[in-house]
Every structure is written in C-alpha cells, then in structure tokens.
Image 1 (cartoon, rainbow, N blue to C red):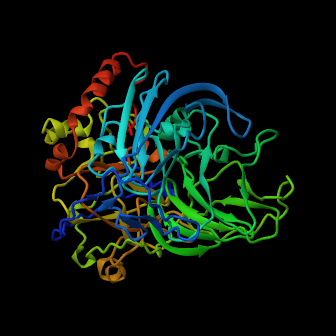
Image 2 (cartoon, rainbow, N blue to C red):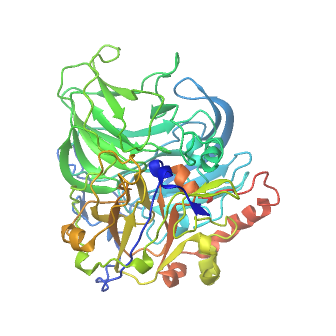
Image 3 (tube, rainbow, N blue to C red):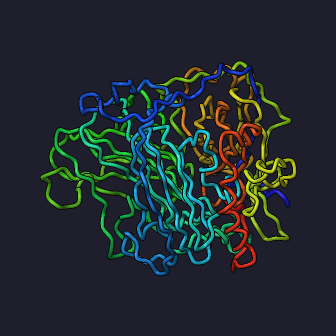
Length: 609
C-alpha cells in the first residue's frame, strides 16, 4: 500500500490522530432511575418548556447522564426493509436501487418520551444484503449490544431474518437511525428519532423532524465501488473522489432539477407563533448551511445536548449532526425559501444548484416564494464551537499532553495490486468480521486474538477522561462521530480559506502544544456526538469512560468509512459482560452464520460498517 501523491491530496485526506491520556478517576456517579414514573404531573407547557415533570422534578437542568425519568411506557415499532428496483423518489425521478423502511423514504419517525422504553423489531426482506440498524446519537447506557453496528455489537441480520432492539431513552431531543452495513443507508435505510423532553426556550408548535439528505439515482453500492476503485474515478486523475449528488431532498421531497417532476417540501408556519424544527443531516457525503429568508433560528440543542439559546441567521450542519431550532413567525404572511448552500470547504456539491424547501405561512397563497434571499456566510465546513451546554461538563485539559506513540496517522492510500482506495488508520483500513463481532470476542474472553484490521483501542479504566487528538493531512474536512458518548470539543484548527490548493501552499497544521494548549477550553465547551475535523488541521476531543462497550469512532462520509476510516474503543472490557447479556448475540449470529458466506451471492469488499 503506497501513499497517494501530494497532488492527490486535492481530494480526500485524513490523519485521524489520537493521543490518549487517562487522568485521575472521577467520582463515581451511578445512574439514578425513577422507576415506573407516569407523567401524571407534567409541567411542560408553551410558556414553560424548561420543565418536564414536577413530582419527581425533571427539567432542563437535570443531568440526563445520571438521572432518567423511567416511565414504564414501551413504544413498539416494526421496521420492514425492502428492496425496490426503479423506484420513483420524492423528486419524481427513478432511483435504480432503493432500500426502504416500511416502503418509504425517510423511514417512519421513532417517537417517544424521555424515559420510555423503545422496542424496534427489524425484518430484513432485502434480497441479497444483510443489515444492521444503528440509533445515531443515542447513548445506549449499559446497552451497547443494542447499538446496531454490524461486525462490532452484533452480527448483521441476514435476508429473511428478524431481530429486536430494546433500550431506554436516557436522553431527549433529536436523533436518527440508519443502516450501519457497508454504506447501505445511502440507498434509503434511515429515518428520524424524536425523544420529547424539556427545551431551553419556549415554543408553541413542534413541527417535527426535518431530514436533509443528498440523493443519488444510482445504487450507492455501484457508486462506492467506483469511488473505491483506482480506475475511472469521478474526477479524472483523483481516485477516491465522489460524484455530485443528483439532488438534495427535504424529508424525502424536492423538485427535479433536471426537468419536470417532484415538488417542494412545505412546512406551515402559524403567524405570531414559535415553531420548533428538528434539523437532521442524514446525508452520505454532503454538509450544508441552512438559512430561512427573512427569519432567524434560535438554536436550543446541538445533537442531543441542550444549550443556552443562541440566535443565528444560518446554521452549518455536518453529516450526522442535528440542531433543534425555534423559528418565530413574525414576518408578513407569505412564502419563504429555506435554502441549503454549500461551502468552499469542500464538503459536498450537488447537481441541484439551489436546493430549497418552502416555509408557508397559514393563509398565504399556494405559490413559490419570490425573494431568493442572500447567500449566507461561507462556513468553510467548520463547526461553531461557542455553544454552551446547560448541563455542564469540565475536562481537565491541563492533564492532556500529546503522545506521539499513540497518534493514529492516516492518509488516502491506493493499493495498486488490489486497485483500491483506502482510508487507513495507523496504516490499516478498518475491516470488521461480520461473523465474529467484537462483542463475541468479549463474550469469549479472547479480544487479544482480534485481527489488527479491526482497529481496536482499549480504554480499560472506568470513570476517567480520555483525550483524543485528530489531525487531518489533506484538503477534505471530515465529520467524525462517536458511538456511545458525547465528546467535549476542546479545540480545533481554524478553517482555511481555500484548502483545495495542494502542497506546498497547504499542508498539515499539526497541533502545537506550546501554542495551541493555552487556548484549549475544558470548562463546559461545546459538546455533541458528531463534529468536524478541519482540512489540514487538528481537533481535540475528550469523553468520560462511563459506558462499557465496543464503540465505533468514525468518519460519517459513507464512502470514507466504507474505505476503513474508523477505529473502535473497547471501553471497560471486563465490565461489558456484567452490563448486558452477551448471550443475546447467539441467535442472530447463528442465523447470519447459516447465510454468510456459504449462501451469500456477494462477499464483503469494504470495511463492513
């Protein structure tokens, strides 16, 4: 395997570097559960959204990592996955291969209240694909076995198979579910999750989730194979480059930018009222900046973390990220564009030059808006890092010292013998074994025999802070997502004006402890489960080891994680078997073993996740 030439760094590059330092143990804080709570004394009203229940008291200041209002209510869902050829999508055009949840895109919304139990039965009626369903952002406290990461927390569900996930909603806010099986969610296997709870600002109407997705007419599998191949790349001379999307869909709808068909998605605003909108970027490869002509957003949550409200005219939303925002209908009755614009970062481009949907005031004529609005400032694909979580956390940044011995280096690499493009970490692209998931190794107490390409990292000590330094040795920003935890974002490089200019104009700006260390923020920094690693730069995050399991930490560009850009943390290995029943792996793994590889028409040719 050889590194791609310097000029190839025009497209795609990540050094997912980590320096891990464990500090003194934190005080133990066992979860306090209020069992069988019925919401008989709810106090969550339009004039007091910060309150949730009064007896016992749960509100916006409750530490949701240590206290959960367990309701005794079970929300039950059945998801049937089907495969459809030449499926007509929400823009009126034919997608060559669609994989859908209950026959729709996006799939049905999982709705629950904070503290409910959620049961999801997955029926895999796909013809030739296994599947796994991951609940992106949900912490899965002591239920790592329900995380839905094939080859890590379970064997995939074979065609014709059924599996049920069951877990408590310990957090509240907006999340999403998606397949975690070789980029499969790009064919349509995804949907929103809404866990109702308190909100840091008042609103009148909850308009529900708004899933913004890039959309591709070919099968994502065909696209992935071409992106991974060294032959015939989408950008000539640059293996690993992705195609433009064919469209951008808002809750599955948009017009056809290439001709007749489709229609704009519309949300209705009631004059004088405040509306909660739950924004989710469910894309394969695109990050967006969203703006609503004539209006501002009051941001009240980043991913599943409530924050002190912030007003903004636009929001950058990376892949996998969510924002809960409040929109006040204080403009003249009419129709207003919500626009999705792209950064020069680069972090996505579409064949739809003006992706948009309509916010229509009640009483407005049924017509397209006439004011296109102004282009918002270029985010340069970088997160805002000034949000303040209401439930605070502090990491001891003075304990962090970079450790080059544990830094994980990765670059875009090509293997001429295999004619493939990879995104390795420490020289090895991740590849899981679907028949032997990580938790199976834990169950059998033989994690030491796991292959090197499973990219496992051991975090054995409970209740400590662990620090990870990521460094990006190329021109593409990367949305990185951690399962099982929120990360504290302690610092990051500033975005470059034009990161696409190759070496020597741009090159890695490594973390410099003498210069960058004093600027790190450990006292209640921005916290979320998905954040951006800047082009040619660094990102420092920390999380607390209070949730035993095998947790993926990966780039959420589907093509990159397919090419191996991932590690997994085996956290508190000895505590995993006591936190959950690992015997629950057996039945589904037996079904998968009976199917794969002997009866599978296609074999694994990527990371598997």
